[in-house]
Length: 272
Image (tube, rainbow, N blue to C red; front, side):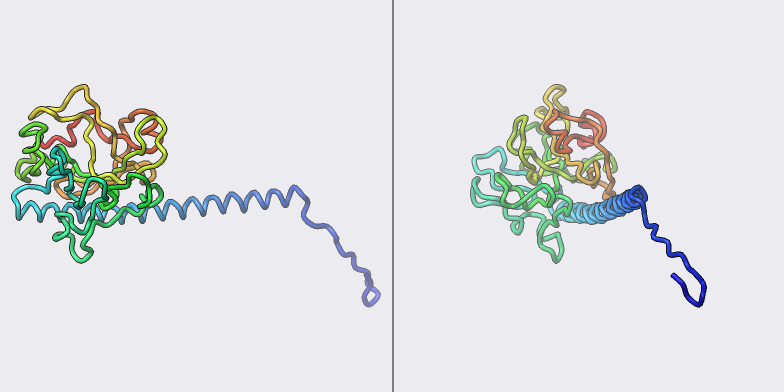
């Protein structure tokens, strides 16, 4: 092209295919990093929300104990023919889901009048899921053997299930689980299809006799490590921690992030 007697050359050179692919690859990597950071930040926010929920459960249970002399029973009538009461709600019959508005902790939960659900559990559960009978527990499990009953005192029987432990009987509150993230596979077996909310945080071993755990009978795992591979726990002194999976169960449980934190025994659930 000429202008005022001066000739200019116009370069028609653009991006090569390799350069375009490199740019696209860099954009893809940056987008992946940003997305990963956003997902991590969202889960950290949900984990903080979950920690607050657990702290509220601790406070409600403490106030319940102040009035009754013992912590709320996990399932006072589970060994009877009725089986209609849980720490998180009641139900009309054994074929109905539990109603959280009628739970024994409701008077101590403030203006919400219900147990707040863990936001991270919405990825796993649905109220329409088959066997979702404990949806009112919010995705949290209670230490039913060491805090929510007296099986360590009286053995596994109806009288022991009728009351929780007195706070003064918990010898090491800072290392005794009260509530934590929980879930249950459905159906049982080696090919579960989904998880449901579940209200018990199972210790590693069953407790049948007063004062000791069974050394051979391992329970189904119900502690759910749903927060980036960790489970939130509130202990009997009120502090909340985030615990990693330490003890695995059968493959089909581990695939759903169920197992136990801490040692392979009941030491973190035992009130003594």
